[in-house]
Amino acid sequence: MTTLLLIIGIAALVLIGLALSGRIGKKISLYFILIVIAIIMLMPFYMMFVMSTLSTNEIYSFPPIMWFGDNLLTNLKNMMDQVNLPRAFLNSCIVTFSYTFLVLLFCSIGGYAFSVYDFPGRKQLFAILLGTMMVPATAGIIPWFIMMSKFQWINTFQALVIPSCANAFGIFWMRQYCQNNVPKSLMEAARIDGCSEWTIFFRVIAPILKPAYASLGIMQFVNMWNEFMQALIILRKEDMYTLPLLLRSMVSDRGTDYGAMMLASTCAVLPLLICFLCASKYFMDGLTAGAVKE
Image (cartoon, rainbow, N blue to C red; front, side):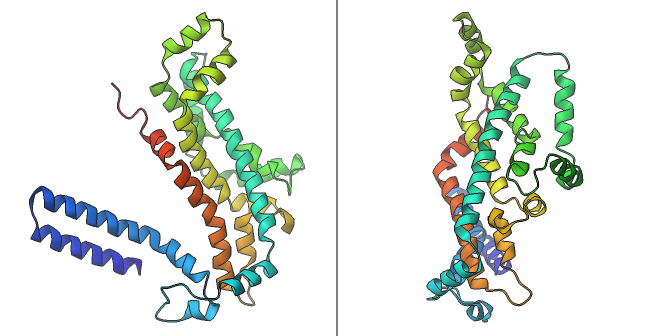
C-alpha cells in the first residue's frame, strides 16, 4: 500500500512538473509532494485506528477493509479480559514522567556547566562524553543488568529511570543550546547583583532554556514511553509491565486477537500524539533556536 502510494505520488509529480513551469508550477509540485508524504506517514496510524474496530477475520480479509468497523466494543471487552491496560498505562506514566523530569534537570545542569564554566579537563571530559554516544546501547546491557542486580533493583522502576537520566545526548543538546542562546553578560549582571550560581541557573538561565526543555523533553518522553529491551530484561511481574511489554504479552502461539491488540496499540500511541501536538510549537523552536546568529 505504501509503495503504491509512493509510486502514484512520484508519477503524478512528474506529470505536474512537465505540465507546469515557473513559480506556480514549482509551488504546486512542492505542495503535492508534501501532501503525498503526509499521507504515506499517516497511513499506518489510520490503519491502526481502523483495525482497532475490526475483528481478526476482517483484518485478514482481502482486499483490506479501509473504513471503520463495528467491533470496537467487542475488542475493548477482549482487551480488558486479556490484560490490565490501566495498570500498564499507570506504570508507563510513572516511569516516563519521572525519567523525563530527571533528564531535563540533570542534562540542563550538565550542559550549562560545559558551556559556561572553564574547568580543568573540560574539553577532554566532553570528548569522552561524546564518545559514549558512538557505543551501541546493546553493548552495555550485560554490565547494566549486573549492576542493577547488585543494587537489588530487579523488577523496579528505578532501574529504568536512574542509570540514563543524565545521558550524553541530553547534555550535548543542552550544551549546544546554552552556547548559542545564553549571553554571558546576563550571568555577569546576576553575579554583580549578588546571586549565587544556583540562583543564576534556576532564576535566570532556566527560563531561557524553555524551547530546549520542550524539544529534549518530547524526544526523551517518546524514547522512554517506547522503551522495550531494558523493560523486558528488568521487569518480571505482570503488575510492573509498561505498555510495550503489555502489547508483547498479547501475542500468543495459540492465536492473537489482533483487533484487541490494535486497540491497545491505539491507547498506547494516543498520549504521544497528544503530547507532540500540544508542544509542537516549542519543539520546533528548540530545534531551530541558534541556527542563525545575528
